[in-house]
Image (cartoon, rainbow, N blue to C red):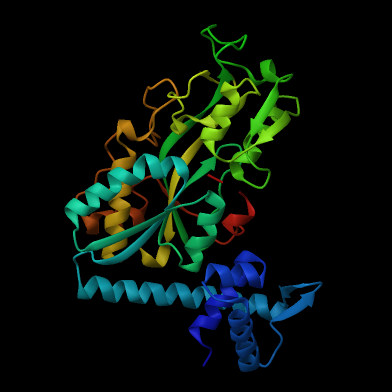
Length: 360
């Protein structure tokens, strides 16, 4: 019988692309991962990988087995969730949440307080991470729930077996030095007005880092990016120092940074969804249900997202008024998830792995 640990390794290897990255994701040494993979290959008696340069790629058999491995892992988790739900209706155990920077400072604290009060037997662990890191950590099992960003300019495409729920809208705003020529005009800023400015953006391999170039190209120019950082505080500090202009999500809340002014964007489809992700097979677990419900409730509160000027950002409507995400209990939460009664979308296998598309 093929070991479950080896099937999980093969699944993560396909997600991450390299054995080194897969081993790190599963907290294995590279030699231990290589040994597991060799054992699996001996078990199936056909090559699952082949060397290309210094790396490995999956063979046709490797891809086929990785498909089955994902299905097996999903079914095992679904079975474990069903048993846990029958054995213990009270949320307990450990749930790990991965959250992007803005969610970790806004939605997450209120969520933790609510869960401590309502479900004291439930242990919550959390880690701040980028969208890219979270979407790899979720299917590998390193985290159980992710709170990530999906930009309108480059929406997430969840892979098969991952359930996604849009929580709240987060506008993208222009960030300008306080002495900038456009400050004080009172009108939204057009990106074309900033075409000759130096820009500050995120790293090129991050979702945030691709935001400004994508929107600027859509407005007819390529931005002159002179500084890069995925830390919103660093971006704001560089703008305050007069080193360029930037785009940031309103939830970054840089209103306390001296020397910075923010403005809405004119004519640009520039917003993002804050999105909750979890493995579909884990949804029946009482602990997961409790966490999903708490995150949903806390994300609809006005204080969850604050603009640079101090005003709350509008929540995502999806045909509902603020507060209508509230559910009557853990079972109702799962039922609503499964029938799509809340802002939810589960995207099937026509989409590639989430990590291929996009950052916090």
